[in-house]
Length: 128
Image 1 (tube, rainbow, N blue to C red):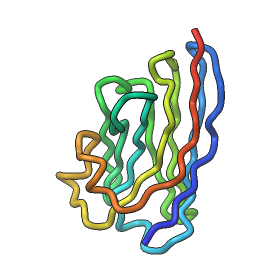
Image 2: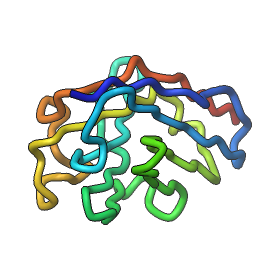
Image 3: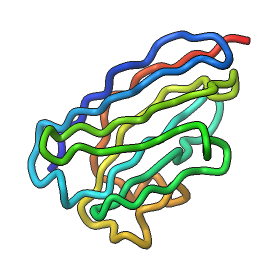
Image 4: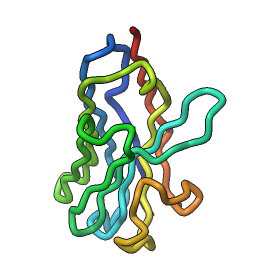
């Protein structure tokens, strides 16, 4: 089981950067598929980026080239570096983890319901 807690959200202007972090207080971190999702008001939760147990990373088209996901398996920290932020990136960002998702299913387009472990979320607001 993973116990996740996000931090690093805030308010920035368009073009700015933020770095989100997710700390895991559980165990077996290195064997989990890890992901960042986001949810804007009135919209469905969408996958932003994932990183599988081998360190392979995947991004949604909307953030590719601007966001970078990474994991530190020793410190058990998942990060999301967000550059060139746009107003449409405004959302609540969630860290998610699942130990049963194999690499081919550890993708941003995997349904959020497939992930068993979630953090409480951190708000990102980008103003124009």
